[in-house]
Image 1 (spheres, one colour):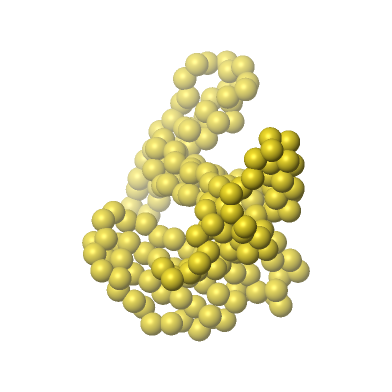
Image 2 (cartoon, rainbow, N blue to C red; image 1 turned 90 degrees about the vertical axis):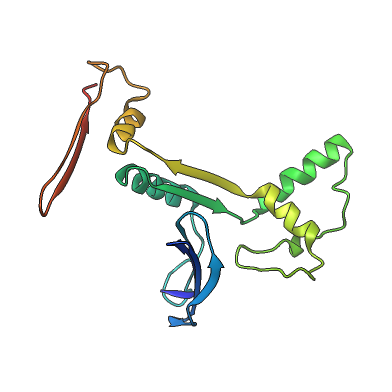
Length: 183
């Protein structure tokens, strides 16, 4: 499904990396000690499989928010590092109106794609800085899971009772989490 995947994992005090090119894995690399836990995945869709490889930020954000609601306490961070033509044009208009200049000669054609990487020797600092100013970033974290979801759904509604009814139960082979509020 992808031409390239990068996985970065922090687990049990270690930092691990693994890349895949056309479904072929590179060696798993131990990157040293790490604090905390987490997984970062970068995915490049295969244009031979998918009709479009353009990602819709809002669709992805909604889905990741749903996953965060359903996985109590999980933190998900979405960063869109793409630069749109509209953003470039708006910046150029704002600069022209204010009489200010960006102060560098970086061409917007040189702004890195999300998949580009840079070494210390790269002479693209201005492009990286310009890119970071334009990226969209959102973090989803709901410590109360479905209760937070019900609050989210009902934030603009008039509710019949002020509190959310919620409970959790675990059995040998099943778990259930319920949260509800009439509106």
